Amino acid sequence: MEAEVKSENGVANVNCKIPESWKQDKYAWMYLGVLVIVMIAGAITGRSLSLLYLIITYVIIRSEEKRAKQDGITWPSNWWALCPPVYLWQRLTVLKQPRIHFWLWIGVSIGLALVLACFSPE
Image (cartoon, rainbow, N blue to C red; front, side, top):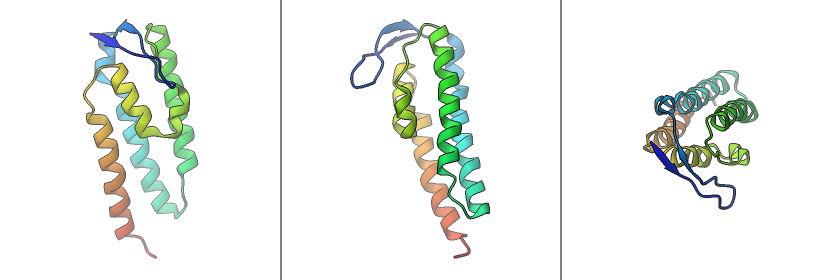
């Protein structure tokens, strides 16, 4: 699989070969799993765990970036970790994968927020 990536405004771009192991996209599933866990934990504790979410997401992003560099893939800037959906979109662009994980992230975020708001004791 070939990926065309361009370096504009922190978005990595280069022609590179994407290894087959990246097709499974376990990292994108980790972003979704962490989102669900942190949102539910926040609802249970009654506290905002946004900072915890950003820290965990950043650790995953750094791990993913390190692996990508080992595989010779130019990766999006880590600053996008502050806006996870944008980072997710950019990484899917680099890997030339469908945007399903991005749309799932958006849907899960909105859906869980609505469900948790309905069951909020306040």
